[in-house]
Length: 216
Image 1 (cartoon, rainbow, N blue to C red):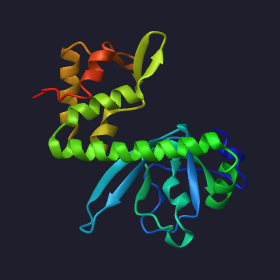
Image 2 (cartoon, rainbow, N blue to C red):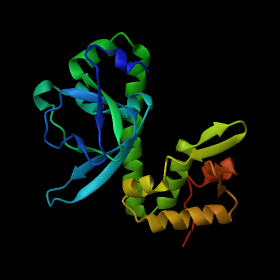
Image 3 (cartoon, rainbow, N blue to C red):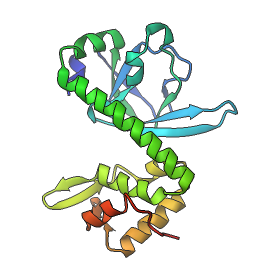
Image 4 (cartoon, rainbow, N blue to C red):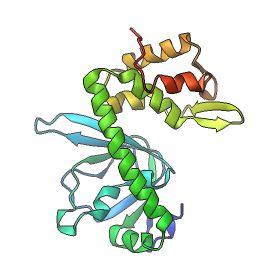
């Protein structure tokens, strides 16, 4: 996707741990993530941090940091979150006014933006519900399906998408994720390979996105 072609888009880099957009900061620019990962963090009134999501590289509209603020009134365009580099990141910094002018002539990107907003909202509600109900296994299975890449007749979740990312997003301990993965292996649904995690039984994994799996 040619975000770099937007007028005044500038190449920039961030080190791991750098704050790209800070809470309470006026947001005048979006950042398109070319490489690396970025955490979206909320901080409550007690100063406690909670990671709400992890942005991945080269994933279309989903890789734009601050996309929600592009459609706020300018006077209300202050970040409610911290966007923190989880690794070394390469971005294109894009002025919001230029992005909005550019996207008006790109109906496919506008449609992708609407679908992203809808999916992000649904995913946030699902994760909150899973955390309250203890349905973590469902979210792990969804994560595997969403991030798997089809190679010939095989589905592989590449090594770069570590399950610790999901542990952070779901706000559960990585030991819980390990237990779920162990159960999936025991059932012959997944196997760990040199390429990453291979899905051996796609239909069964889909089944466990709708029904809780006993893993304790």
